[in-house]
Amino acid sequence: MAIDVKTISCQQCGSTDVNMTSETQGVCKVCGAKFAVQQRFDTQNVYNEVHVHNEPEQKECVGTCFKAVINPEFSQIDFIRNAWISLAKEDAPIEVFSENFDDVSIIDHQVVVDYVAVNIAYQVSIGYDRQEPYIAYETYYKKEPYIAYEKWYNTATKQYEKRQVTKYKDVKKQRQVTKYRTVTDWSALNGMRSTQSTAVAENVQGLYLDEELFTSSFRSMKKSSAAPVSDEEASKLKVLDATQKGITSKHSSIIASSVLSSLPGDHYRNLDWNIANVTKATTSLLKTPEFEAEISYNGKTYKKHAFPFGKMEIGGDKIENEVNLETIISDMKSKLNKKISDRREEIDKNISKATNGISLLTIALLSLSIIISIYVRSTALVVIAFAIAVAFFVFNTIAVNKAESAEIKKATDEIETEKLKVNIEIVNYSKNYKKKQREVLDSKLSSLGLKPTSADEL
Image (cartoon, rainbow, N blue to C red; front, top):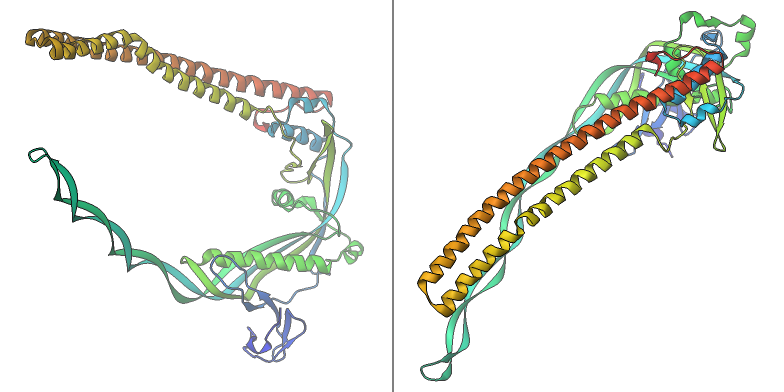
């Protein structure tokens, strides 16, 4: 990205006399402030622009940052026990508990924990959406009359004649309608925001750091677990340039997100922010162990790992259980719903069977009354046949309603009974499944000479 030096001004003194040491770095010739020219943090309705961010001077992590080694609060045996418990929590297949973890390996990390509290100055254009009415035209069709001529046969004259008739046709028209569109009003906003950022990064090239897992353990770690290293070892521990760049980039993203989250309105553009001043900054370079163990199941190898301090939460691969508790319960509920649906379909069939004979007789009597009225032409017989048909119709309606009520009540009772039965099965299955799972887990722990689980561990 090419940088136009004329557009860059020092955030500290305002001078435009800037020496660009690279495409992304600059130094003010007047006050000596260092600048990083960065592409603005970009989300929703914004444009890519170049902005200058005033960076606090980076201090060397030599004798100024806290260098320590974190001593384990848990043993390798504790890690293995928690790894087995984590498998149970993840609902791993019960057959897994017949396998064994390999020996625990220890990975030596160097983790940089960098904390900074800053005041941010920013300027931005804020967009507020509103609904604006406007006139539009829409097409519609209206039926309009027109005169047409048609032939008709005059029975009096025994001839075909023409006559006028009024007909209607769809006529395409347009009309004005009021519609609404979203309009964004923009206004400038300047402000200050105090925020803080904690960035964590691995300092050993080639090592992977589970940052979330480390942070969780680090936050709950005993303060006494971190012991300062000797002066000789401290002189050997240095933060790599690549690590420092990664830390700086993470701080930039965290701070930018904090600025964005504080903005009002519906949209923003032309956001420019810089660090006004740093209120607090601490850097720690920590030597920390990580426990890792592998377990094989169905021809695949799975890894579990944890930092042996703080909460010592277990991370790593999850062993999928194809026949897990949730799947079984879901299948039970699906079968129940299918039974309920089938039972409701039977209601109509049973009602139809119960009243089919009366319905056919009613139709036959109505048909008979019509035949009598056409051929016999006896008013008395017609009235009698129709009265009988109406009586059967009324009787049939009562019978249908009665049969429907009885069938619905019967079906409802059956459905509720089935629901209760399935729900009891689900509860019992869940209890038995979890009981069996815990028994298998405790049996595995016992075989390893470990303490069985307590109620709050699962």
